[in-house]
Image 1 (tube, rainbow, N blue to C red):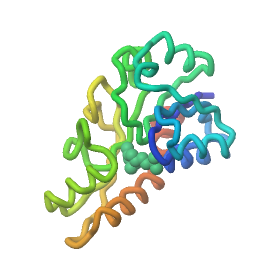
Image 2 (image 1 turned 120 degrees about the horizontal axis):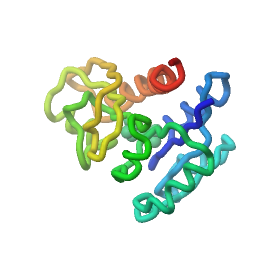
Image 3 (image 1 turned 30 degrees about the vertical axis):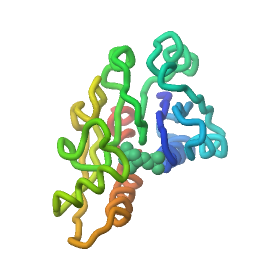
Image 4 (image 1 turned 120 degrees about the vertical axis):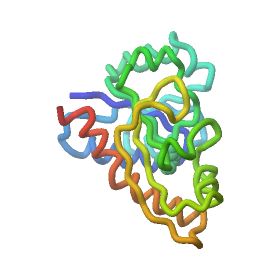
Length: 190
Ligand code: GRF
């Protein structure tokens, strides 16, 4: 059985989906822990409602190996899934969890990635550059934003008058459809 920790900073719709997919079914993995860097984030309330341990750590605590690693070790965490987590993953964590940290990005990397490219900013940039399609990218995490090896991408067409909300809705649909399945295929199906 693999133990998953989800790192999130926002509303937590992806975290909730992962929790339902794994914890409601026998899939060889369970979400054991949510780590969040924002006390008021929606994901905190979701984790509580779903009965998943949730630890709030600030930026300094996330960057401190003596704080973060014992939390992960205590629950025997094998895999870390970033689902809307806005802080850069420190190098000590990348090294400790080599090829066991994945992120979902709401666009087709390598386009529209990097520092500051999150949430609405991504979708605004996609619209501004007149893209005909966007999508999701699920990738391994290295010590830089949005640049680790790509595991999976899915695309969706855009219409000329799509708003940021339209693009966001299309991307969220892909996230809900594929994210948990790709985590399963990557870490559990072997
Ligand atoms: C998602 O669009 C995800 O792809 C991105 O941040 C957003 C998080 O949404 N990295 P939520 O907090 O899971 O609802």
